[in-house]
Image (cartoon, rainbow, N blue to C red; front, side, top):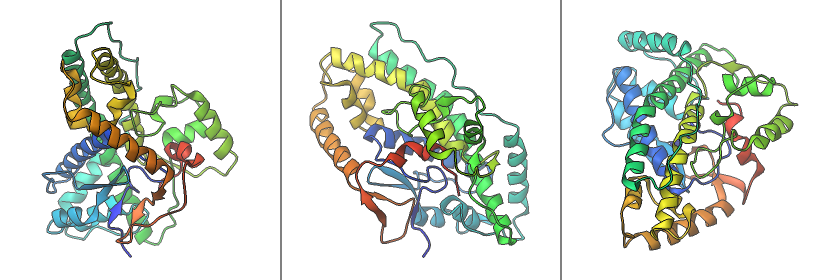
Length: 335
């Protein structure tokens, strides 16, 4: 049965529920990346992100993608590559202009490296909250080209790997290039690894997680690495590492002004309302939203986890509650 919802391309594997700020920020970044990638391939762009949230995880929505792309040459296979990177399929023979665009970007992206995370942004004590939020928004806009190209890279890798399977080749799951370096003991930017949520630390902040991942997974035979596969999850975690200090400075100031009771409350509001934290008064909606969203997040951390590919039955894992595997998701092989 084909999937109706999927996170197999961008964030496969075990995944805990994200914070409400985290999952809505991810929705914004994925929506922007999909518009960019489809435009580069000459395909229609969605007016709204073709995604759905299930238990605070973000999924691509098959119905929305197929409705958007069905009438375009090559569109059906692009939708399939977005939803099922572990499957097989080829572009139709008439998709020459699409194939040319895809080939150009595959070559371009193979020689484009993800920039290192760089220095942690510094914030002066007593910084103006409105300026902090403006700085966060400006930096996010400046960093989106990284995740846009990374999403396109994953899509092109999926198309290429599906085509090889359609020819009868065996194409197993792969590591990202950075994960391959990590397991082989080579130097790598640990800010690329970590949960896709600004509430969580990157492995650069918690290097013990990298060592634990090497111990837990490094004794197994290493899958091959792929230049393009896995770029989105690493680029997204990398930009979170740059943005999180700005957001935490804003939340600390909101606590000092009495808008928030706890700095972590700021992660239980949606991204599109977070600018209200820069105001001088507590919004009337804030207290109830934080209380309800915290309760939802806590409950979902103890509940069964939805699989990365969901049919209409919306299958869940056989177990529930905290899972050690959540920590290893950022370096597990990708379909």
